[in-house]
Length: 152
Ligand code: ZN
Image (cartoon, rainbow, N blue to C red; front, side, top):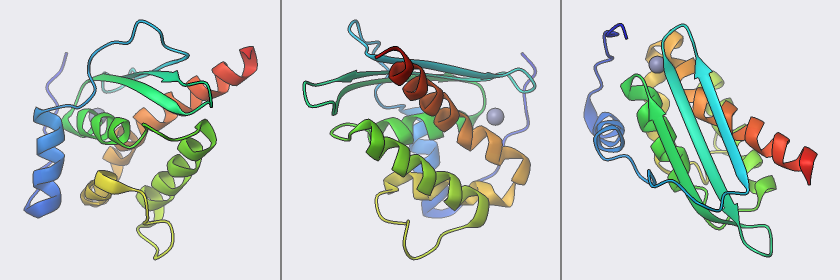
């Protein structure tokens, strides 16, 4: 796999990105996933895989998130995974909408709530070609939710 030059990230947000990159959350695979999703970007080799298990009320009870590729996708996958437990799939999609909006257009006063560590990925907006890396895990998650709904 070609080694991509990585972004240089300074400051608190950069530290948070590096923390998730070095210590990704929720990497343990689930045996009993209800939602499974994978998305791959053949141009840069980024890959994100999610598994979610839902409780009887349809809330996210278990999360597994794995990724390969650059530091941005690995951090973004971990950050997104950390925000999912306890949410309904509808709430996950709302979070995704706010997150995508924040990456494309920057932060607005409303819509910042709930983004948690994903706020740190605002630093990636300095590198527009890398926004795709930051959003790939979300694309995976959305596809997985869509597939889950279509079979249930
Ligand atoms: Zn990437």
